[in-house]
Structure formats: structure tokens, C-alpha cells
Length: 188
Image 1 (spheres, one colour):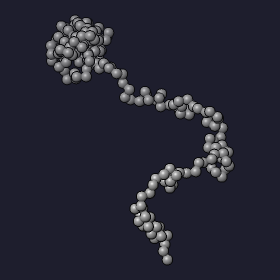
Image 2 (tube, rainbow, N blue to C red):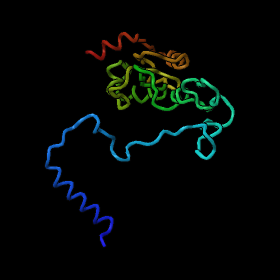
Image 3 (tube, helix red, strand yellow):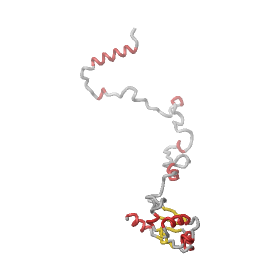
Image 4 (spheres, rainbow, N blue to C red):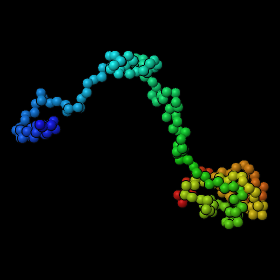
């Protein structure tokens, strides 16, 4: 007795042998592939169907009303993503300046190494300097040695008031450079 599989194989073989004849394709003969279509789910037609009574909208609330729409980006009261994102790292100011900050204590070491005149080019030779540095800021931090800093002359783009007072107290002076001088120095 032949099984269903063998009967199906036999039918397929006979179909292949008859397929050598040319079959004319017409609109009446077109049909979707088997299993590619599904009957439409008619909602609101009783509990047995799975989408009865509330029709898949749940019970009460904004989402169950006709013409419901929530605000774009609304996440149910949770802080929405468009308000959370800028708090994450990586949102830096474009074209931000990177300053080399030197303390008054570090000036002692630089004076010993390079002499009493610390110009922009001299400070650029220090190990603190890198290509991403845009300028020099001198801030208060440590005492200046009066013997070393007596004839100190420093070029910088910014000097804090406390650092300026310390430098002038020992007899030194500060030459402030404007940010426009910065671009001229880089191009040279």
C-alpha cells in the first residue's frame, strides 16, 4: 500500500513530465503562493476571536479614545530620549579651545631650565605642550622663588589675578597675548 509521501512523489514526477508542454500564462491563472496569504482578523467580534470587546486597545486611557495620538517622543512620563541624550558624554563644544595651564610653582622650574624670559615659543618646547594646545594660561598654584623670578617675563593669553599679583610682587612682568596672536603663531 503506497504512503502519502510516495503518492505525492509520484504526482510530482508526473507533473514534471507533463510540464514540458508550454503553459500559457493568463491573469485568471495567477494566484498567491500557498501559505502567503492569511484571512483578515476581524476585531470586535467576540471574545473567542481574541480581539473582542476592547478590540486590542486595552481598558480606558488616552490610547483607547478615537483619534488618539500622543506627543512625538513621549515615553509615558519617562524622561524622553531627546532630553536624555545631551547629558551623556561626547557632546563637546565644537571648536573649544584647549589651554596649557601653568601654575606659578611650575614657572620656577621653567625659569631654571629656559631662563628668565618665557616667551610663547620657549614654553612650546616644554613636555606639557602638544599640538592640540591652543594657548597658555597662568594660574595661581605654588610660591615663586624671588631669586629666580626677579627678572621674569612671561608671555601668556590669560593670567589669573592671584598669579599676576605673585609675579609682580617678586618683580616680574606678564605680557598678555590676544587670541588673534594665537593664529599667527600657529601659521609661522
